[in-house]
Picture 1 (cartoon, rainbow, N blue to C red):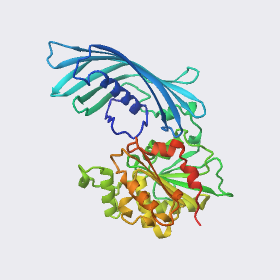
Picture 2 (cartoon, rainbow, N blue to C red):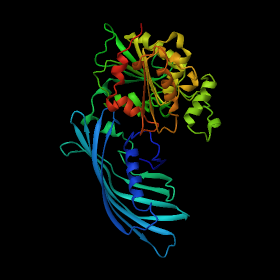
Picture 3 (cartoon, one colour):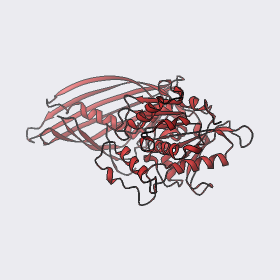
Picture 4 (cartoon, rainbow, N blue to C red):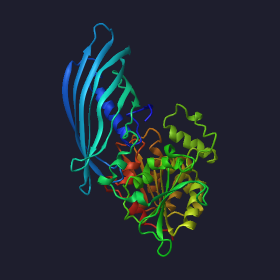
Amino acid sequence: MAANMFPIRRTRTRGLRGLAVFGSALIALTMVAGPASATIIERERFTEDFEFDTWECGYEMHVVGTESHLVQVRADKKLDGNLFFTNNYQFWATWTAADGRWFTLSANGVFKDIKAKSLGGSLYEFTFHEVGQPFVITDSTGTVVSRDRGNITGTYTIDIDDGSETFGLEIKGPHPMFDADLCKAVEPLTGGDSARYLTARPIGSTDFSMGFYEYLPPSYTATGAKSPLLLFFNGYGENGDGTAAGLSSLVFAGIPRYINVGGWSTDRPFVVLSLQHVEAAPGFDFSSCDGQPWGGSCNMQVQHELDNASPAFCTTPDEVNNFIAYAVAHYNVDPTRVYVTGLSCGAFGIWEYLAKYHDDLQVAAAVPIAGDGRPAWAPSYCGLGSTPLWAFHGALDDVVNPLGSIEPLTALAGCSGVPADEAKLTVYPDRDHNSWDPAYGGANGDDIYAWMLGFSMP
């Protein structure tokens, strides 16, 4: 693998998409352990246990683990303003699925003699080189399933007064697991076989004008009983050109990712079609929202004011409408049981679709996640009552304002004649922009799939 530089922000992630992100977060944690104090730590050993639940792979897993560090910080009297930091660390975690299957993720290594350079005031920069075995995955019998190798170097800068930090990695060597998806790597251990039913339909291979992924459940037949249809619309990070290569971005997040990593229950009867939005050249002009809070919401408002004209950075209402018409015409699906869902930009497209095609809707229910419904609907939200809605958002979202879901659904719940089960809102208090992993994975027992199947068009 060629050398690669990429930034890691611990305050904003799109979920632990792969071991690269998972490992970087771990490395950042070890780096903070010693030097983030104004008092020099000469030598200290500490251990921390952790335990949490995650829906990262599309199904619930319980994680229990321990990390330990032997930290030494020494000053070089010959080099004014410099410290040297060494951390010998170990890490392991057992991930257990609801059905009892499990695997272990472990790591060990040494960050040796990392120089802490004063950049003035309370700002310090560390340059490190890691040696060891970054990642090992073992199955329940202790057999090694995946092992990473190679060198890691990078920089870490922290202001010890306000805690602000930046972190970068340079990865050299093969590092086979740094480009892998953790959930894909453990698919044989805790996942299912949904990926075998997933097919890429690149642009030009079908009658539709855009590329998409097709999932046909084992129960699907081309004739006979009709299947329910679920359409998924992607976030900005999964945009592409619809080609075979471009479509690969779609499996980075949301339902298509869960299907691809074996995290989708094949007992669900849905035909799932996941459309890839194309941001036409020369690209959307984001400049008017530079420096604005919740930049995603700001730019969604701009796209709405431009009537979703090309080049749109988010899914447009016409794309949603046209894809529904295509899917119903080309698959053996029940036109009274069509459902739509999307994350971030895809959710925004759904809100816009519900507004523009309000008098001729073709969907039985909608689940927008981390999108902003205010541009299309404020201030008159009662019209949303014609479609059962369940919106999700993270309370800590700093990309799309949580009010983009809270305001429409709170207002809708107060409208006359709207049943409570058709105006649902879930806000995760500890989630940032990525509220889709718990929503699609079923956190807290929420089952959006059973909920959607409870509705049909007249």
